[in-house]
Length: 103
Image 1 (cartoon, helix red, strand yellow):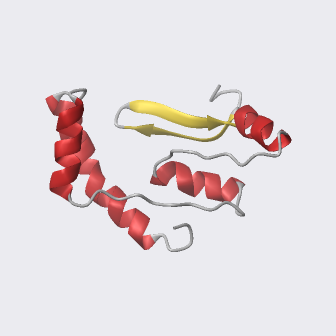
Image 2 (cartoon, rainbow, N blue to C red):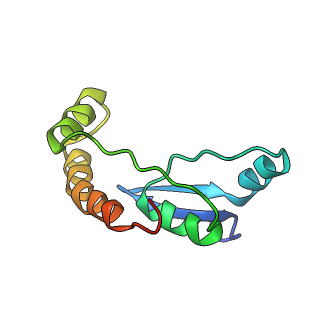
């Protein structure tokens, strides 16, 4: 789908690719509904360029320790993926705070 330019936005996050398909958003809009997406800061920046009339909400963990506890509580992360996610968290959160044009 990437080669076919089928995404409004897509990003590699923590070693995995995530994206929003153009077809999915078009279908929602044709039904006169409002799409609600769960995307990271990279996706929000790209989506905002494509749909500048969009509204965005950022949800932050109450603390770094809380984020770590939530990730550990899932039981889905390897030690390496946990380290990567926690290492990326602060720069991503800082970027969200600084992007007053989006959030």
